[in-house]
Image 1 (spheres, one colour):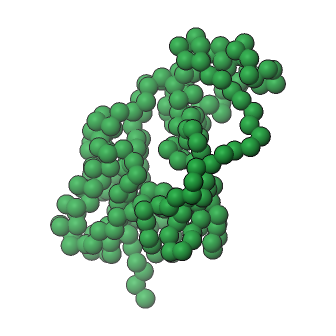
Image 2: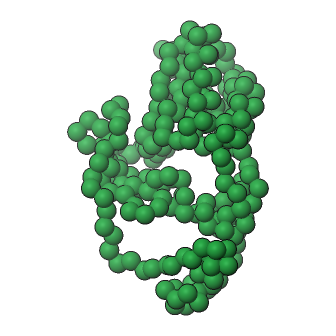
Image 3: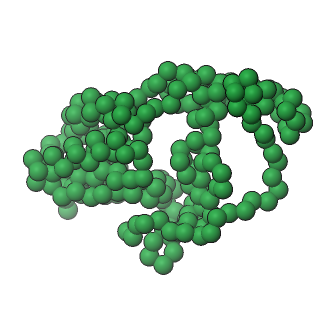
Length: 233
């Protein structure tokens, strides 16, 4: 029986990647390239899209060569439709439409959040998990119910990934390979002092940069009303 093979594109933020994967989750290749900005800076949509345009075609070639397949062996082309940054997302969307016309292959649009969950299911073998979904723009509790993934709770302020990115910028940490990784390499001040005081080292750090950061201990968490992802598998 012929194995199903998909060529997938991910370009929702500062990383452009092209992967070749089989229906059972076997990854045949997964080359990618990350747009790295100077310390203390984030990445803007226009410059990020230009980076993706520069690297996407060499990455496609690398993906096919590493997987040792030809376009004729591909069954479908997948791409991240959203959520993500508009301009970088458009790069993958345009490239995949061109390849679809050239190679006569169907296109599958993928929900970014659902893709993360489904990858986790494949890796762990979980059948019907309740997911704590933590990424750059999302911190949510998600589960499958009544034909779709639904959001049962989420942060009421800022996503954890976004918080770490901002914190790394304040510390002027390198974005290579990732802000979160570089935060882990830093020896932070003693956090056992009075964290609600403006004399706390972290507060002084933020105040010196022009931003005051008040840190609180929270016993209970209030969540937003339950919602649902606009996706039905």
